[in-house]
Image (cartoon, rainbow, N blue to C red; front, side):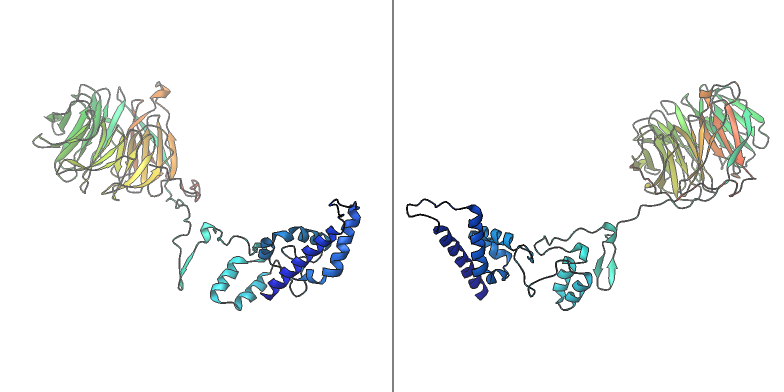
Length: 499
């Protein structure tokens, strides 16, 4: 208080003295006497130095300078005369009043030791290091730290919930030997649209656009039998594991049951209003499920030929259907881009999956895991039962995918309309091989489409039904090793697309 009064009186004296000095050069009539400007400044400086020099070294706070506006002119004049040894706010400092503008880290820490805990935190926040020192007048708002360094301390434990998560990386895939083509089977006169292997692994059956069903010896690839009866393209075939029956469906709206002991049709299942695109048998009960272009799937009692349920809900053609013993027991994929999981008892939809953006033409169930995959031109997607939880995308097969199949070793095969076939590691989604077999001599390049594929019961052979009227048989390359065919995998960040 005494210092403020003293400073106030000093500045008052300076102001009055300046006024008296100015009045000395004004005549009685009110007109100023001419005076050289340089001599005027020199006299003012001499007067200030002689009379008020000692008091100008007193420290003055910034607030006082702001409040005392009349002294601004004097202060600016004083600064020009005494530029050396000035303080933070333009006031000359003595040796006793000097402060360190940029304290070192050690000085800040030693100062913090002598302060209370709250003040220590303020000191650490204000002057963490010499390069980050902020003046007291600067904003005290804390700067946002990097996300990877945000840690909340509670007692002796650290909560890293706010830590930025690392992007997921693909784990190293299992090594699979490459598959190579070793046989091409000819005999159909039209596109081969469907294929199935019988439970005994002795023969397999194909359906074609030439309206015939042909049975082939699996070991030699020779034709054993041709069945006629459909009047349009045969789109689906399957052999029962519970009875000596073969079931087929086609674009003639018909669903037929063939007795393989007599090689003739013993039952017809009537009800679909348009082409029947696919069918499947329930593994534990005598139930047949078919899907059609009429946007429905139908459940049939195999023995009585009765239609148990008509599964309605899709808004476009149902392209594929699969059955399993566990819930949900029926899965359908449709051209309306959705996948539906059905309640077999109630005949109603349990879950509708709308992640795909284009038609779903293929669905396959993993033989060991409680998961399945669906194929569409936008992506191959993997799902988890029973609620259809999304697992991951398998991207890269940029084509219309007509068929999917998977073996117990985790090799997923996707066949496309352009004749390409991709092989994937099921667990990681790594695409370890791509195949594009040449078309049969005499066929057009545009006829290199894959409509269906299946592993045999031993899973050592892979059969494909193609648009060049052939069946191609692949097997694993026995000479391949991890050294000759290494996995060209890098722990790249997974780019999970929106679904």
